[in-house]
Image: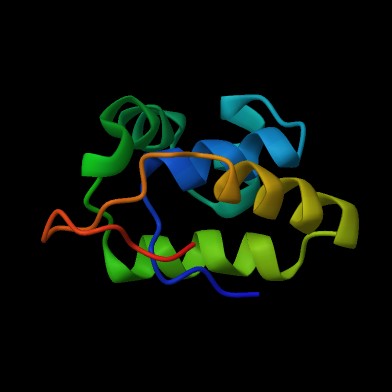
Length: 91
């Protein structure tokens, strides 16, 4: 599964689905805890580099089916999904 719209909200949802602390999640995806903390604090306004999105995508693609299911449930249940145009982005 690849998520083409990573924001701090989706990043946090994945981290929580993986049941990891922010520090352990950052280490697992090869990023600094400071970077992940920044993304999560920015929520839907997060701007991620393509390489960073690829690292988070890789973590999701390697996740167990249970983690993917929890991530998808959290992602579908969040009412904030708006893109840069202000229109609702399909989950």
